Length: 149
Image (cartoon, rainbow, N blue to C red):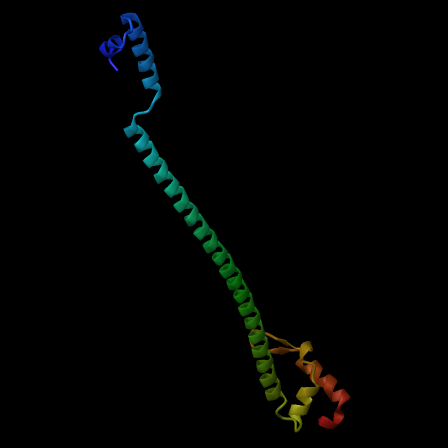
């Protein structure tokens, strides 16, 4: 409103100025529609970003769980492979020990039976392919089962 319009309504000039001053103060409190629309649009964009980031966090949490389970599975398989390797090395050691002992006992008629009577746990295989304790074990079997020799 303008001062002229207020005066036409029957107000004095002094009252018209006071009313216009009050209207001006109230207008300073209000936000223009363009500014309100801009803030509202930014708010909606930020809400969408927050929602999208929450989805990403949930997806990453799921990936983290998958990663942990895969890591546990890999460690289990590595442990299992280590155990299998130990078993294979033990089998190889036993086979090598068996063949070396059989070769050593080849001059005896009942070499296989003598070999079965021997306690292989008392024998030690060196990296050079030498059997430690073989003579003592053969002697032990010889005293226990004379008929095999």
